[in-house]
Image: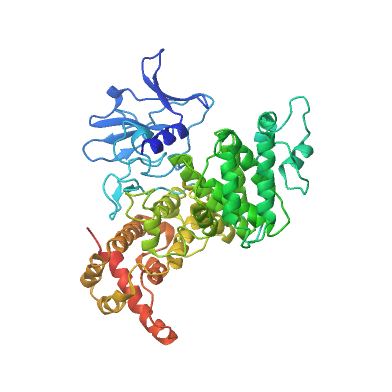
Amino acid sequence: ERVRESQREREMPWMTRIDPTTGRLMAVNPDTSECVWDTQQEMLLPGYEQHFDREAGQWYYVDTKTDMVTYEAPLINTDGPAFVRASNVSAPSSGSSAGGLIGVRRGADAIGTRGSQPAAGQGATKLFKVEGLKKGDPFYNLAPISAPTLQPDKPSGSKTKVNMYQLEGFAKQYFLNPKKPLNANQLKAVLRYSKEKYSTPLIFALKDSFSKSSASIAKLIATYMEGKESKKYQPGEKVAELLATVHPAPELRDEVYCQLCKQTCYNPRQPALQKAWEMMAAVCAVYPPSSNLEPYLVAYLREQLRDHKEREALYATCALRRLKLVRLNGAANSIPSVADIDNLIATALDPFYFEDTLESVMEKQKQDYPEMDVPVIIPYIVNDLMKLGGFRTEGIFRIPGDSEQVHYYKLQLESGQFENLDAKDPRTPASVLSLWLRELKEPLIPDILYEECLQSASDPEKCVSVVHCLPATNKAMVIYLVKFLQALTADENQQHTKMGIANVAMVFAPNFLRCTSDNPAIILQNSKSEHQFVVNIFTHFTE
């Protein structure tokens, strides 16, 4: 936990200082020269405390009596906002969402944190609790957000322009001999795949001390890419040899990553390309890159998600997820066994959060998110939907998002890059949430309770009692969704979304309950009772 908090501190450069001119407390972002001053305490209404949100870059205010929070300062005899920004930075417009993920940041992420933080640009917002999570956990509170101006996604079927030369910035600094600079085309030629064998390191600083080791790395990668599995050739053994070469010399880790990026950059040869990606996914689970290379490597892997090559995108997804974990946990103390490496290769294409049972997803995330009672991706999806104005979007959950954006968003979640989700339309996370539920191998309400649900459909009290009888994991997930969807269908939102409880229940009923028969007539006959059961849960469930 200390490592994670330290990482979050590095990601948020805001620090507090005393303004020597006015003597007031101020927050300073040294990276952007942005300054945000606090509000003088005597100007605030009695009973309010002020705290600083590092992620939004703003002060926010807490009513100590009601625990209501707001970014608009509750000033005496004034209605204006309380913060003043440096002249080179404009304040966010009303309705914008500078606050990022709601209710996730804790501890060192906010100075004087009290409760969850609202979305930037909002007035006082009553927080509604999402049951099924423990108090104090991230995502415990969610705040409704008004809709910003939406940026329409690209039409379905249009291809995103992909740039695989994401290591160019790193290469300019570390690949080149200062005495022999290369032009842009020459530099790209160094970065992309070529048939030519090279015996010198890509990183110039390694030329004198690690030429032989770099040549060995290149040879091992090439041998692995061209090899065919046999009794004499086992994939895990070659990867183990590569790791054994790198283990005593951490300086070579970046060279390995750079060579693997080169081998996977516009490589037209299959299955050699797949072999290179297998090795990339395995190495990412064992050694982190240097802080100099990491942002370029992450950008390169993320760019693969934008491409329209499914297999490469899945390998990059796995590599990103493993890279995130190895960064948090540190490099392996010893070289993994051949059996462990074989397992890393074999599982590289397996879905992590999608296309599985709820129980299995919770088990897989248990080590990294032990405090979570629901799959960690769900609150991120929900918060993203709200941040993008899903509560003010007509036909949310009924009108699907752009298929290309939905696919890319799903890959981002699978990669574990939760903080960098970049959807522009709330229909994208809405569609991914529906997709995740639809792809669960088992419905949220187990089949063993299906008949009881149908028989209880006309009795609201019995419907609610079924929820309380669910296994703990299913119960937490159902309660989380019900509380979120109750907020979505509140009267003040229906006028915008045109989605009442009956409409939302129509969309979600097949995810809560799945008919145990394959007979179309029975499926159709039961659908009415399934819908009524879900309507009753949405309408009458309280805790």
